[in-house]
Amino acid sequence: MASPIVAGSSVQRTVVQVFAKAPVPGEIKTRLIPVLGPEGATELHCRLMRHTLATAALARIGPVEVWTTGRGDDAFIQACKRLLGVQVHLQPDGDLGARMRAAAEDGLRRASRVIIVGTDCPTMRQEDLREARDALTAGDDLVLGPAEDGGYWLIGLARCDPALFSGIAWSSSTVLAATRERLRALGWRWSELATRWDVDRPDDLTRLAQLRSLSSLVDNLTWHPASA
Image 1 (tube, rainbow, N blue to C red):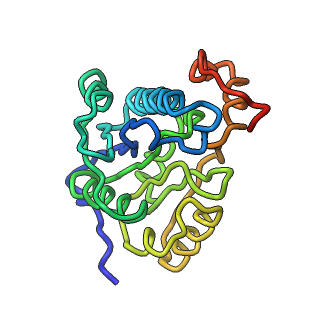
Image 2 (image 1 turned 45 degrees about the vertical axis):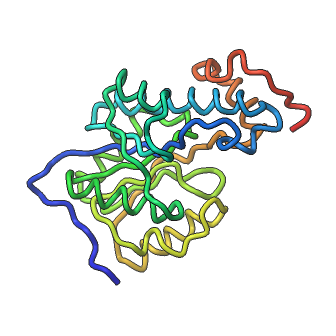
């Protein structure tokens, strides 16, 4: 097993890495295409991405980066770069674990702490990111944000080990449990944030619309809950 990467103490900062697919109609939010259509699903993805980036920027815990698929020259991605001042990186090949490992290792060469989030958890708060940063600063090796579906919506690292990201059945209900087992085997100290939910399925649209503070994310989107 490769030696874990530990950030140098001379670089005391946190980097937030937002994993986001390029908004290509038909290739994103595929489980929502039957009720939103390709364009509607793409629009929702863009709204969720803007919301996530704004939350990360307003948390003011460190630089925010977009780790995207494709060539990185998508107009929407470039608009985020220009308007929000985020850096854009391309996700490498491989499964989700390989891509997160590469991003984490890259970040830990430049910073003491890396926090990775997706764009599917609109209930993530600025305070969540600060809490993750503070836990890592206080000595935790890792922080997890558990998701209701058995995965996680955030992973924060002060060090990285390949075991955390290999041999995991990504996009399954066992991701969180398997990650906890890896952490126990490594003997790492970790903490967990509040359990939250992702917007992945048709029922999640109704749930989102019922939250007054977030209902604008689905405003003017047409879908048919009864057909979900």
